[in-house]
Image (cartoon, rainbow, N blue to C red; front, side, top):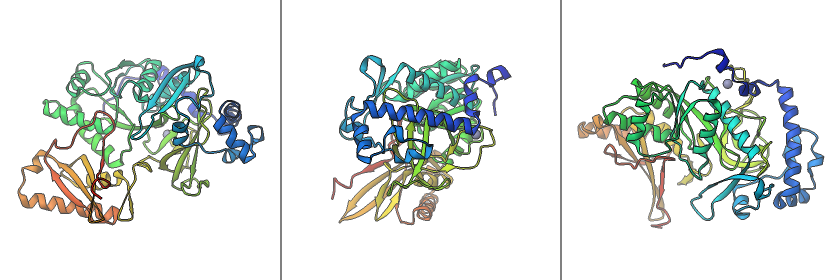
Length: 445
Ligand SMILES: [Zn+2]
């Protein structure tokens, strides 16, 4: 593995000290911030104060962190229903930035930042980079999209605040990405994992091998990805692939990050308070049990977000991390309840299909799930790209591969699905979040 020269002065960046706060100090800080932020939401956001009044529980009644469970949840549709500025706790004069995320249907959601909020955002991104072993010696190629999407600017300001050299290349123009990566001696890349897989492949076609570049770290996020995908990326590119977590409704990237141990993501708990709930009942889950992640922003001014239901499925890892950070960890998020689809009564997540595929040799992580309805019955076809070497194999070998994949998926999902092997480069490459599901069921029902 390639290493950037480090010295202790850079390595122990002062911003990272907050990652190691004694737990009782951290809890006291969280409680103090929770009271302040709940009061701000109560005073300024009509939707929230209305719900608190109905529940008969007000911010001044908060006496411990457990009382957070008595605060109302916030859900994505609240942001849509109050579009564009109904959740703001700060007048527009104090808002210095707006971002928005476009949904597949209806109005987008709008998120806002005060100057203070932007500083918090930069600081958690600085801490994220440090946790991945990135320092001011690094050259960071930021291939997240710049614009209304929070990925680009979020990573950008964090990387600059760290003192690293930032290349604000944004997404797309893959040949240029590869040229820049090589010629500018890039050591860190930020993008979606699926886009990086495409870069590895394109580099090969151009006669380059990323394993020979100085690149050593990838900070990958904005879409769920599997452990099998990490292995694929690390083997094919020779870098360390870190998972970063964030969502616009909370702040953008930098809510949580994997440290060097790569065993779960530390949540920057001094700013974001995590809970895990049973998605059906809303009741809290025990540490270690899987459920829906709920986050409260403890310091965000423009839109204080109380108990936001992320729809991401994970768990809180109760054991302390060997890295020494006192920030709690959540398990890798490989499932979003938004991505889930039901086929013949079985709940399916694309990441399960991905893991099943990558367990089979000769496949590449480019796949698409096509759902159709024939005579009232749901059908699922997985289109899988194979490597060029495999594609030139005999018909018998291809049939064998197809059966192996079918069995691998059946083992995980418990249902029989149709596999279609497709030629290399048939499945459209995304420069951002990969489109994994094509649901045609309502078109032909
Ligand atoms: Zn750790």
